[in-house]
Image 1 (cartoon, rainbow, N blue to C red):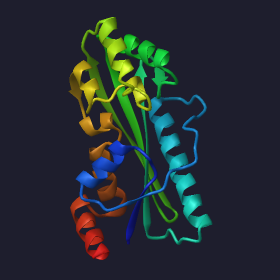
Image 2 (tube, one colour):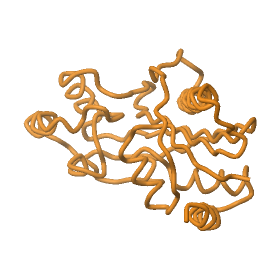
Image 3 (tube, rainbow, N blue to C red):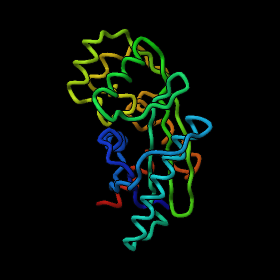
Image 4 (cartoon, rainbow, N blue to C red):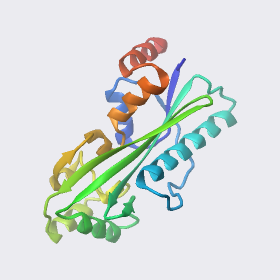
Length: 209
């Protein structure tokens, strides 16, 4: 039985989403470089990274002498996929400008891999959301990059913040574009752990009292 949730991420958006769902959690940041060898598909790529993050968190907890048999570790990785290319976080302002210029006035897909680990049980799944960017001028792109918001964001934009000005249409889970697909998290809880977000939230919040 799950008696604690650990989020393997420092992402403010992922914290915000778990809080929105009413799930109490602790944060343990995984020691991974968020890079993997080129794999067969973006789905495989994000799931491999999510699992690597979850394993890194588990190792941290075990090294501290913690028993993780009843601890649910949630880890996630998000990328943008465009024209056969995997696009992660920008390494510089120039990189962000090039990425946004490439996505300008076109469709791309946001993939997130989610890994849930409880003791020796490890499951992963992915979510894909299609995003259509409006046509942007170079001036708009430059102004947006100058805000610093694209840094640390897959695809160099934050759809829930000022980057929303570029988003013309979304098909699929919006929260996936934020960085943690709620639909996938809820489905995994039901399918793999025989619970749901409401029951789990109620029980874990009662335990905290």
